[in-house]
Length: 189
Image (tube, rainbow, N blue to C red; front, top):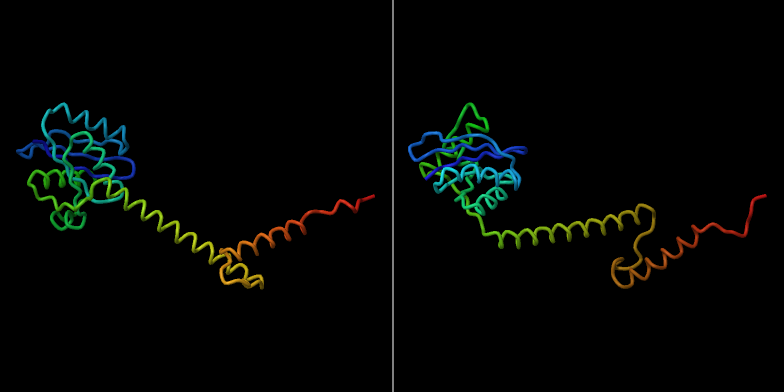
């Protein structure tokens, strides 16, 4: 069995590969995108051994987790605060973090977080996005009401965005467009 520690940053994924005795097999970096992770999987596959990996919990870790599991890796996402408690280091670099995570995976000490399956995560993401849209819609409605009050036009109906409010808005819009059309009757000499 091989053990990999993965440290993710915005532009690269540092990795450190250990064998069962704790000897370094390979270390390096790969782009943290689909192609880069596929290349990393192909590079590590040449060792022809099962692989257990650990990556710290951060933005993008779930993507890396899912992509590498598609390539047959067993990946755990480690709680970043608990990892820091297990291995407090004065000199903290991406390469050292990757080695620490590989060592924790080798010793089976990864403080893993629970990760729901991709279907549940997708449902949760849709619910979060819908909530975001509802809050944004409410904010825009409040802004319209505030703008009307700022210009001395309080809303004459209880719900400006209901049936009677839409009728009132269409009347106002037609009145505004009629006022803004220049008259062709007057001409310049």
